[in-house]
Amino acid sequence: MTIPSLEQLYALGAAQQPTWPDPAALESAVTTLRSLPPLVFAGECDELTAHLGDVASGKAFVLQGGDCAETFAGLTAENVRAKLQVLLQMAVVLTYAAAVPVVKVGRIAGQYAKPRSNDLEVREGVELPAYRGDAVNGFDFDAISRVPDPQRLVQVYNSSAATLNLCRAFLQGGYADLREMHAWNTDFVRTSPVGAAYEKMASDIDRALDFMRAIGAESEELHRVNFHSSHEALILEYEHALTRIDSRTSLPYDVSGHFLWIGERTRQLGGAHVELMSRVRNPLGVKLGPTASPDDAVALAEKLNPDNSPGRLTFITRMGARRIRDALPNLVEKVTAAGVVVAWVTDPMHGNTFETSTGYKTRRFDDVIDEVRGFFEVHRALGTWPGGLHVELTGGDVTECLGGGEALDEQRLAHHYDSACDPRLNRTQSLELAFLVADMLRESRD
Ligand code: PEP
Ligand code: CO
Image 1 (cartoon, helix red, strand yellow):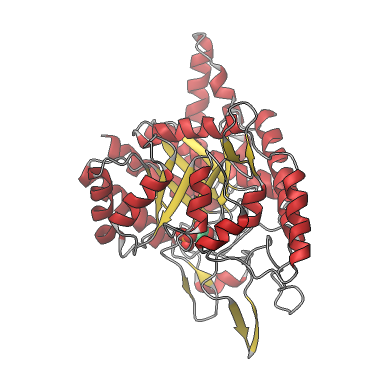
Image 2 (image 1 turned 60 degrees about the horizontal axis):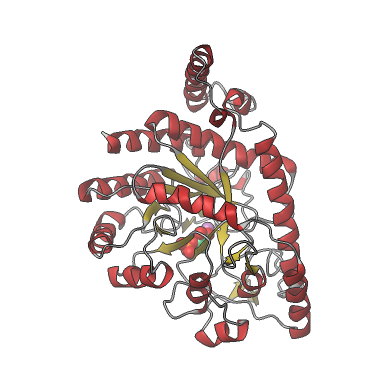
């Protein structure tokens, strides 16, 4: 399969691209990127496709999570470790409580570019280009930092490489061993209800592991974990420069990450993003909001997965808690009736964002739960498989989303609001979500 040139892609119409001011600087950054080695291997992408095939056929559940927007400054060993830890904790809660294999995917090692509703941001009469993620420009609201700088794309590559290196080291170095479950919890508030629930589960699992060892049934699987990276494939220059022909199979892969998704704002059927992604072999996601019609979804599936192979395509629905029960049934029903093989995942974050009177972008934990509940209800009613959860979270104790067991209120948002873009669940809220979703998942299997 051939890959269209950047010019050909732009000719199709490319939404949400920065206006790079200096073409020579852009060319230079792209040339650098084209010469750099792959961040991920084709075989790893295929492995994830196979796991997602199990999700599409109802045999596994996928947990995808991480920052809304990674930042260069946020790349520290502690941050990456904490994010991995909360994902592993959530995954083990889901696996244990629902007895379903959980496919783990981070919104990590590449999630540096953001689509924006407006090209410009206005503050107190001053108008500047909107922040489009560290891949494009700086977060600070000043004229210099908001100029799109293509050299940042090279920094995305380097930061992603460093992040992946840490992830691989943590996971292969035994950090993800189930025997470490208690250790993952040491810095957690053990006295909190969710911390206590987790401790109890960890002890139960320990006993089960002892039993398995005693009967000689211990397997390598208990000490290994599957983990893959993902990000929104947004900036065409970056994704195009990292699209390579795999030497073993002669097939093209976008080696910037394992799983790539097309956002709600860039999923135009004839547009550049869909075209480029249709040519690479990675497992793909498409975000579908309340305006996505069943015809749109079926056409996207025909374009992105003409062979209908399980695991190639995931639909990530983000309807909002108030709309999911009306909007999702028709979509799932018609897509299923058209014979489309797809993994259905819920993103209960992006349809539930609002701004407080004090100017913080936030989400209510209860809305997040309600959308997930709606997702499970709809799939149950239709007899389809609720395949996974896509969330924005962090390993730290941020105060960005309202509610949860600690009843975080509007006053507290100011304490530790760190997100460069959308509000993330903190560690406690993430773990609480995992326990609630585990109950829903167990019920859906009954
Ligand atoms: C996101 O996932 O951060 C995002 C921008 O989502 P969506 O495309 O669904 O709006
Ligand atoms: Co977001």
